[in-house]
Image (cartoon, rainbow, N blue to C red; front, side, top):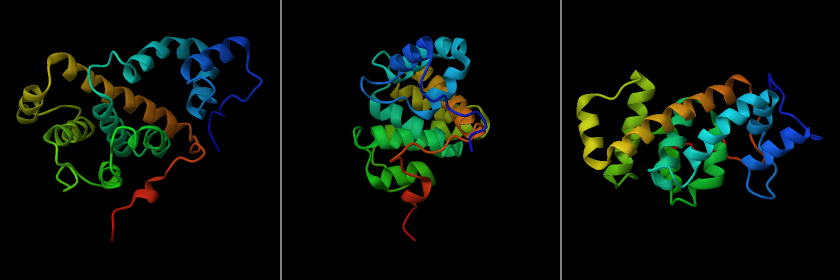
Amino acid sequence: MPRIAPLDPPYSEQAEAQLAAMMPVGVPPIALFRTFVRNLPMTVAMHGWGRYELGRDLTLGMRDREIVIARTCARCGCEYEWGVHVMMFAERVGLTPAQVTSLTHGTARDACWTSERDRLLIRAVDALHDTADIGDELWAALAGAMDDRQLLDLLLLCGWYHAISFTATATRLSPEPGAPSFADVLPPA
């Protein structure tokens, strides 16, 4: 049972407008957004940042973004948000089943990662998750692969999805219909 139940229709006019702005046309709002609108001023305030993180202005490409999000959510143990992103974006950005498994249960050293950039992103997420910092050696490698704008986007994207993970997990949101679970992508025995 969710600790804060997602809002169910009928929505107030303001909540309906906000939810419509947060979802693609014709797609019903996900439980996370229906939970957020219980605090409408907060939702309105955070909507712009969320659009930036998932929009075209983010300096990281979609594949980079989804690697960071999936790894962050997995490291935070947030099956809800991980499942939403794997369901909606993993195939679209070319993540293989082995890579989804690795992002969830593995490391940047797994054989499925052939791109140094992908490995750097995973290492950065792990460092931020484990230490809230990035050591000098890893920072130098990241700075050799990304410009300052991309580095800032990487840091804040990871932090944003920590906040999203904390919220989805602490409110005990149930998985979205059709979303995979961590158990669905276990490594081979």
